[in-house]
Length: 275
Image 1 (tube, rainbow, N blue to C red):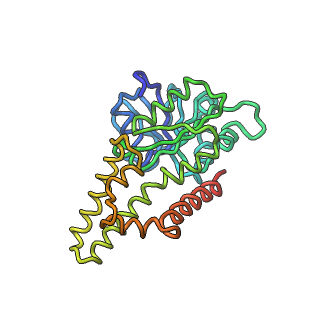
Image 2 (cartoon, rainbow, N blue to C red):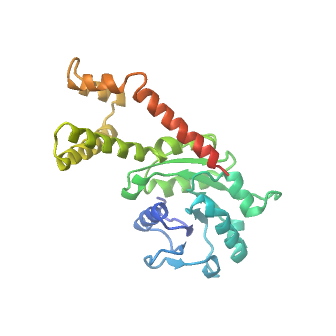
Image 3 (cartoon, rainbow, N blue to C red):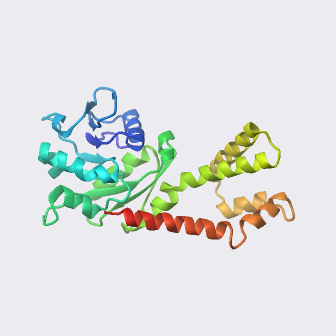
């Protein structure tokens, strides 16, 4: 994160917003305001408010972070416009919402017919952000100033790795691969655990084996210069036990098809949810 991070207005402090805010506070966030109806408390000197009308009159953030559910974003923006139109007119917008496009966010802030447009950056982090191991895809229009790009990247780098995409529709694929990806890994853990029990292992042993194998393999892959294919070959001795299992999983109608179809389905759904 930048050494002197400008003040933020964080709208929504649930699982993702909360993880981001904690990381920013730990990194030395300037006094900021969090707007959330359910959050119980936040550390000083930051201020928690329940509605846009409670935002202090002398508080002017440089960045509005939208971390609410997409279906509540329009109302949140409308409330902000009603209470503090000056904030909406001058701040950069960083959205961590799935589906909401930069055009939709800009139109909500300035109206569909307005010539003025805020700088809107879209970010798609994932749940490992809660432990500082997140993966975030970022998009901003080509005309977005480099300083705003750098600030946005710095904010998301506080919770893990970042990557930029050139076209906004690519955020849908980011959502399908890394945004939804942890659920695919958790499903694998479930299935490995179940299979271990089916092969005679006690449930607690199967659970530990599945969880530690997946987390350890992920850490090894993260640290290794080898790509995933090379790492797999290192584990797979010809004619051995792993080779027998891989032959089943890599069959044309097994994982190669299922994973591709799963990511395609998630991408389609992200596009359907786009507003």
